[in-house]
Length: 221
Image 1: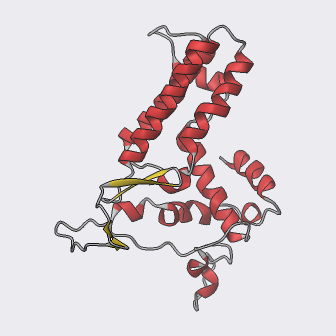
Image 2: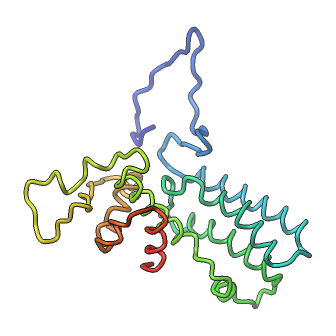
Image 3: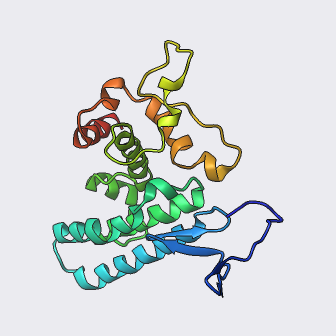
């Protein structure tokens, strides 16, 4: 995986078998690409979610709104959010392609496919957050879990506790924002999320549990 125009290539073997070089490959449900881009993964995610949504439209078109919403929340939206703290897109094209799936779901829920209908009003009526905001919350929740030891952490080396010089803006629950020269790192989990995390109120970052943090975060955002 590299951005170099002329990468140094090596031949790798597993026993006597040479390993084939590929441009992308799935790992734990996430499509990894050799150019460090998430375009392939996002495209596959959107296609998979649209296929399931199409299945729901064909089979649940006459069901009650509650059943439709349960089906969407259980079968479609998880596909759009699986491991999203890792691949959360920053390109408008990718963000819009994901949001379009939920917009189609809103029309399905409301049974309103007229071209003059306002989908934004539908989403507000359903009280559905846009998926970009939901991914932002997921990234903050991930950082909360790491900060409190609920999951293995790779962020503690960026803690303000390691600073020798403290200022009035320094807080023990804050982190140093890592510098980044490439977009693939600049918009990754830590560089992209730490600025948002540092601006959260101290009482929110010190919440006693993940559930209470989620509840407070919903009120904050």
